[in-house]
Length: 211
Image (cartoon, rainbow, N blue to C red):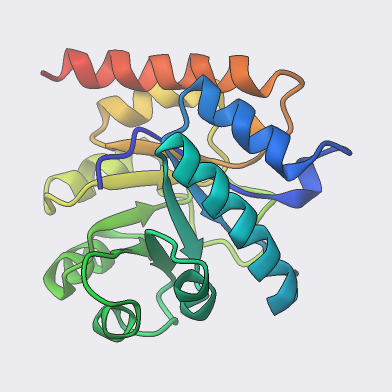
């Protein structure tokens, strides 16, 4: 998976706007992967949101990932699933989803990243980059220095996540991340499309500079 700007949903930041309008604006600005992550949604609410996001992402040719819920990912024919360290193993997810699906894994240090690569993850989420409002049980901050260490040990795409703001993007990509995953910095923005566009340009610039 070669994502550059990865959007993670967070309904608490919509501020009265529809999920559809925000996702469409974010994709217009350069988001190329959307993850459905709503920890307090019921299964039915997740299914409804998943069907909506699947419709939008299929129309606009953007990758769609479901967080944790392999059943929901399969039900809506998502492109893949993102697993936590305590979720089902990667191979079990592949067995359920079938061939050709993306499986990502959250990691927080070099050891977890190396194990994710050994187990066949398609990419790793690495974080948090900063303390974040969206996870109360967050691990110690990894930061750009942690990204650099992990990059020295794995060749997998690294999606940096956790409290990332616009000003953080360039340093994180320079440190070896392939992509940045963002929640509130885009969703809570008063101009979602413009914010996404600036962040995508920063990623593209730094990745271009790396050759």
